[in-house]
Image 1: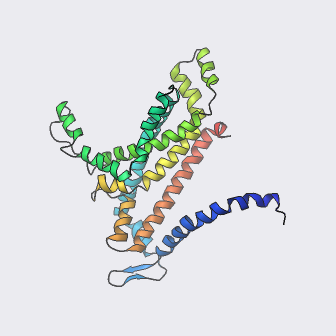
Image 2: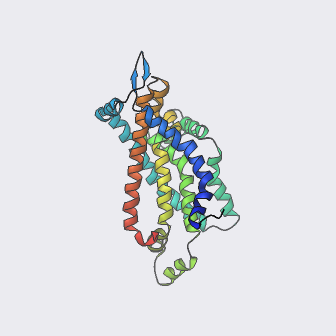
Image 3: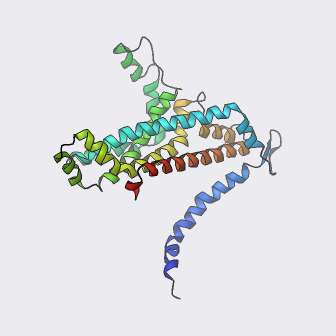
Length: 286
């Protein structure tokens, strides 16, 4: 039996599509269906179609605060990763061997360590008796103990450390496709190094910056381990709030509704940002 050319891509993609449907689409569908069920404290989950969980979330100011904190921290982490990750990738691309390989391993090394272990390390540094607090007091920058635990700043710093390698990888891939002669030509025409980076390098690596920012924002908004350890119970994010509903109160429908709204909000933000940047840098993407 001869396959038509139009059928070949579908046949080759079939294993990946089956895996994708089994381990992603099916669980998400289950979460979506559970979110429309009712929950009674003494009766548990009751199979019935209701919008009660979504109405409770959308009419409670507490959840607005949780969503605002989640996306606010994710935005700050994304901006920090864009600045530091792009700079690190550019400097790394200009290094010579063997230093390039050594520093690349240093940057990507944290990915080899569990995110929980890394976050616990930051928790030790952030405490009122931690190294950061002692250093600030020794330098005279603080009159007393400084505790970054259970603060948005502490969560942002810990998440930035976790997410920067993803931005470096994304920008690094774009930098490898740039012709070095374009930078040399701009310098020979009298442009400063800063102008070359701003007018020549950045527009060409914008696809890498955008893809890295999308990954960082999505993973930061849905992160659980870091906000749970550094933020604690004081600073709830959507992920930790959904976790509490699932395992503490056993209110699976409400937790599922939180997860669904987080997914929808994240997708809307990413698509909107993608379209805005593509309009600004349309020539680069095309």
